[in-house]
Image (cartoon, rainbow over all chains, first blue to last red; front, side, top):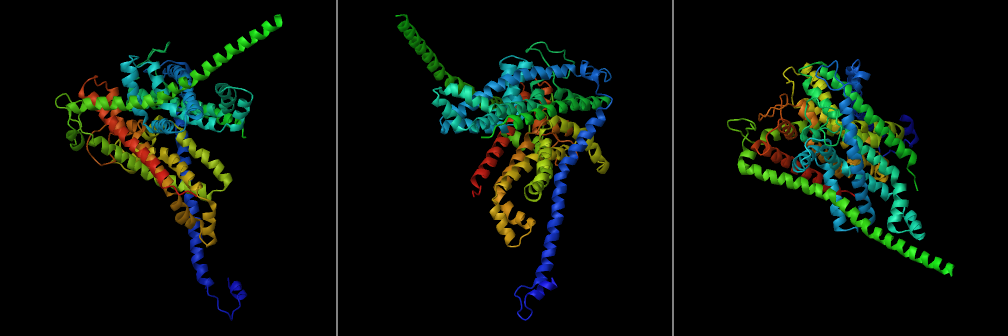
Length: 306
Length: 311
């Protein structure tokens, strides 16, 4: 610092007292540095919790998660309890949610992006979808309870649960499909029209194929949301009983999160149930991890940039 | 001769085809419109069921009792009491705890990722934090009940086995990614020229963040808080498992408190017979919940649109 003072000719007094500046500056720089680490720490906080959570789940399920657990039926005795029923129930649920959301979601997205005139009606549907995405899942559960379970008389069956879940995740599919369709460049459509194709032919043969990776990614994310969602199914009334493995869409069923729920609240009564819950969580998280990885791979590998 | 017939056939065939085509072309938009209207029907379904059953509820219970008294005993055989206030305090207290966790951590995470972290660090940390958002809430419920509550009881012996504190904290952790990523988006949209201008005047990064970036991004940041609150209010499984079912009117977060969502779960799984007042109370509570979250979501969108500084 002194050297710098020397540089500025000593006889001509500088208007800026560099000593004062230096003093203030170093405090500000120090504060900035400290805050930098504090912010890093706070960013890591979430990750630390994540690690603890995963560690707890893995540690609790060691010795409980094995082939027998995956292939046995539900049982009140912790040693013999298994989740094959819940796994099959989850698959059944996906059999409904997958096709229903795919048709509804992609159809809605095509309509909004390709057919609907931008105007009041368009923005009405759009706002409606945004609002639906923010409705708490339990409210969807009540809708399902009232409409599908009571009015349609489906009872607490796979079809009632599946349709409720489909409506719940529909906004995810619609929004991601819309984004995918919007990112298809206009010149592809024009080239198709130039070849004499009609609008629907263009959509079917040009737009949808090139939007497919984005649409698929959204579908997978929606399904993984549906697999982990519990609240609507609790409301619909999946009983805590030992349910036989479902054989048709109208049978009652249970899914992995429901099993976690019942075992967690019953762990007050039987300690071992906490381990069963942890083992089920590990299965659920593994499934979700695989699904999300697939979604990321599809997005990175097949998404074309124009 | 045969050649002309061939051409005629071809023309006829083409006409037929193009007729079919135009039929398809005309019916497809109608079909797609029907699909798109399902989402509108869903909203209509939600609103109409909630309004209708809530109306039936208020035939039995007065609005004054519902919103001003403090006793909630829905299944009491003698004299059932219906007040939403105990549930409201439960919801408000758990959400308050959640936001006390989510707002500071989420905002500082956003600042770190958008202002301090190098691109390489950001590329690693951001997806990892998003993982928190992908974990099912039931897993957080398990975590709150079997890990966080016992841990907190080491420090606060008076803490109940179910309480509002532990699910509040866990809910806050769940909401961190939401607040962080929305705030970060808002900060990222602040143009670099503004940061550089402040830095050229000698400001440190912290000063740039506090005096330039955050004020410029404030609408998006506040929107992220509001959406976070709305998430916390609507969250069900964490509070159902870890916050218990006490319907006392209290503000003591170390004790069990029931939220609106947990009440809905309890009454539906408790098999309140269809047609009873307890059953209708479910819809009145759900309607309140629906209105709250809807208003907050709309408010969040409004401020982020209205007060966005466009550069």
